[in-house]
Length: 410
Image (cartoon, rainbow, N blue to C red; front, side):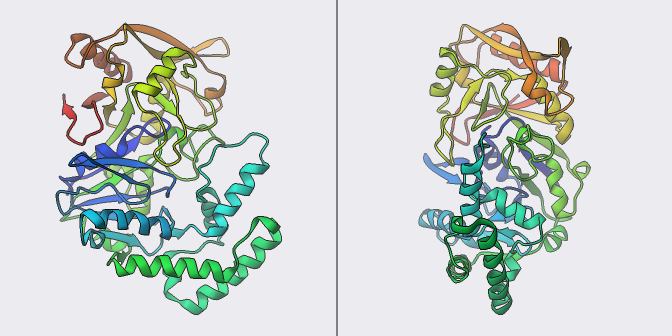
């Protein structure tokens, strides 16, 4: 059966939630493979807005199911809040979600560590302070907890006691929750989602279904925030490329398509390099017209022009096969639209950066294209053709508003 991935190709906030929701009605499963509650995926249904931070962007009009995979870090309290919001309008919907027993947990201590680390940095990374980085640190240092640990109460208490002792020695007064307080919060959150009939499963069980059921893998953030190939250290702590499907026992080459969601311009939240950032009045207009404020934090996003070198980089890093262009209507009314075609790095022109360091020293080289009044203008089609010619990849869908059905296929 069909298997696709939908990822972000920029610095996140490309509108993946809407695009996944648009595709999801044609798939049996929507599976998140990385990240945690630092993501913010916004969808609309019957003119009502829903923001998922953890939950996959399943179709609210079909019976598609959502899977929270082992590559994620799960904040059980946040998950319960999101389920409660959906239950108000869709009673019983929680039973359509499946939580991987091997997914790692975000503990209250991780949030306290996140606050502590960010306060100690001379150059802040700009984290959401949701505990995501420290939770992944615990995972890779083999000190983390997984969902299946909640099924053995005695062992859980022993592990929490050991963790508390270690963290208190390392971080002192920054750790404000006792082991029993953490235990109570974990069990309250876990028992609540179980009471809503959330299913517990493993990716092996899901893998055996894929011969007869279709799946859409939903990425979080964007390629330029990937822990391995993003603009390190100003990145998230997880995999943002389609290669994250390996946590399900799949290779990216086994996917039928990898759709990359790309804004018609570029934005970034937080610190870090951003070659095409526009700090002039035009950048402000982009922010205001595009309502560029973070779904998770509410922070104003930095804004700039479409960056083709970074997209070439993302295409190679994530084996992208098709593009979905979002927020195309935000550029309506501009007399002129800029596109960065290549970088100047150390006095040399480069079509694509060779390493993440290049993003810090790159000087964007622009071409100016004629603007358009609306998306029916031939100049907008010329804009799309320019992108396709320069990237060697098709823009298959164009999204032009927040509602799920405000999209067309070319």
